[in-house]
Amino acid sequence: MFKARSRGKIAAIAATAALTAAVFVLPARAEIDAKAVVKTYADIALAKYEDSLTTAEALDKAVDALIAKPSQETLDAAREAWKAARIPYQQTEVYRFGNAIVDDWEGKVNAWPLDEGLIDYVDKGYGTESDNNSLYTANVIANKTIEIDGKEIDASKLTPEFLSSTLQEAGDIEANVATGYHAIEFLLWGQDLNGTGPGAGERPYTDYDTANCTGGNCDRRAEYLKSASDLLVSDLQEMVGDWKEGGAARKALEDESPNAGLSTILTGMGSLSYGELAGERMKLGLLLHDPEEEHDCFSDNTHISHLYDAVGIRAAYHADYKRIDGTEVSGPSLSDMVKALDPALDKELSGKLDATVAKMEAIKARADGGEAYDQQIAEGNAEGNATVQAAIDALVDQTKSIERVVGTLKLDSIAFEGSDSLDAPDKVFQ
Figure (cartoon, one colour):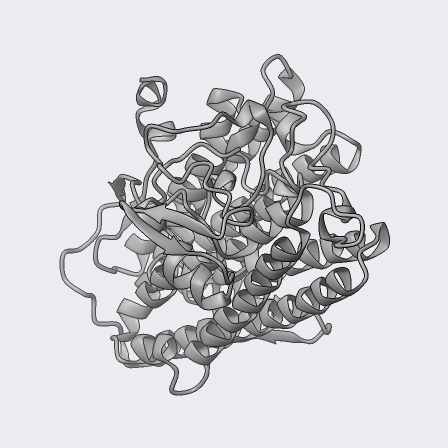
């Protein structure tokens, strides 16, 4: 299980660079360049969300095949489709911070951690109740009525609307994650009961076989999985529309000054680098040596998610993206602007972004060699811990250079997201 932890309660830290209080008016030529940089940023966002949609549609088809003919083969195919869908989506996370439209939407598709007992059966070791969540073991798949805030709710039909409007964050509890990648992940893999030992979740395909049902309620489990998969597709369709010409997210950028657009890009880079990825997703789990703190905990796919977050941060700076069909989207970049003003700083940040990706690839190499991320953060695994810590250190280090870029471009002060695990680690153990 995941422990309940508020996704939104991340302390903000002020950027440490000495920044000007007023927006700096760039010369006319640089002003044009800034507009072009922001346009490329939006064009790449569209491409990444389109790829995320394409892979989600492939996942949806794989889910259809699993439900129609449950077998180890169709379950494995659905799992592989889920993993493939994570690669383009994780590269979009750099757009979350700084873009309010994306941040408000993100919880529908990538919220974590989740109390999976809300959704389906769980192991006895999960427990039966939580002081923080009355729906901790509601198991909506097994129960056609549930109680939310003292009211009896009809859960006889597990429709997309029911999942998104009634069950998602039911009772205003963020751990009640009913939709998105991680709900689907749990339904495909089940709980990972191996702790920091080898192995991911081992849900049997017969959990979807109505003729030979394990786990009970195979028809309702299939109904839930299909609704969650359909929702993922429709939610990504919404975000694709938001980044098309005239879309809400693109228009919000266009309506800002070019300097504000640059600040948006850098806010995403710095906040994902520091508070979210280095802090909440990596350092916290390493401090606690807790496998329940890994991002893709059911599938043991966390090394991939972390790697492509780092790749997405680097791409936001260099303004380049290779689509799943092999074509490339690129254009004027922040790197171009910084290089014109301070070539040494551009070289510094570019090198640090590369170094971070390399450290993430080292984590992936260990995972590919048989040591999953949850094993790498295990207590007593000195080499694994050091590999993860090296990536954390690289993320923190690149954030310092991102702050310097803010100063070089003479933008308003930016507050990057922080994390107690980095800023006040003693609080983690209180």
